[in-house]
Figure: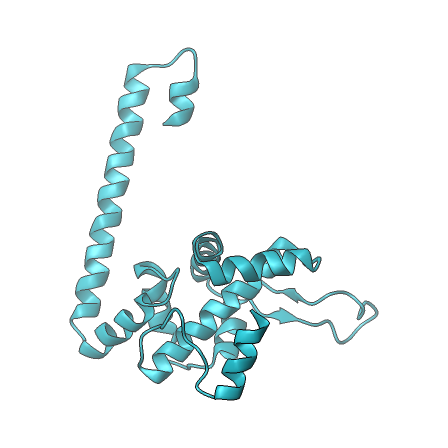
Length: 187
């Protein structure tokens, strides 16, 4: 719509057609979200797990629904990261074994995109992830690598929340007093 408004020569018919399409897509998204909610609310265990996943920062309804389906198989974040295609894999055979580990980008692309968007969101809006992001950039890491690390962190947090059946606690501190003292002095 913005592109049409910027043009010097524009048609009212084109503006109306684009506006109608935008409204139809927005309505379809709301209908799909409503149907996802209805399906998940029909099963109490799914509903409880969904509420736990929604407590994690950056995880919305669509990402939680995708993770809910994947977590039926396993709660191991490494296995899930490998399945999604966001875990870095080293090159260990052949002539070019000295290259950096890379993600293979196989697995469900929709879930990978949703995790990437969640990582971008928490990087922008949540202080701990912001500090982590800028600290790693200051160490010379690439932006995409750090975002991939944040995706893996979110996946680990989601698995831990579902495994423990406790909602995400934003300012969680370790129970061990010695470890807690070290974290206070490091800050």
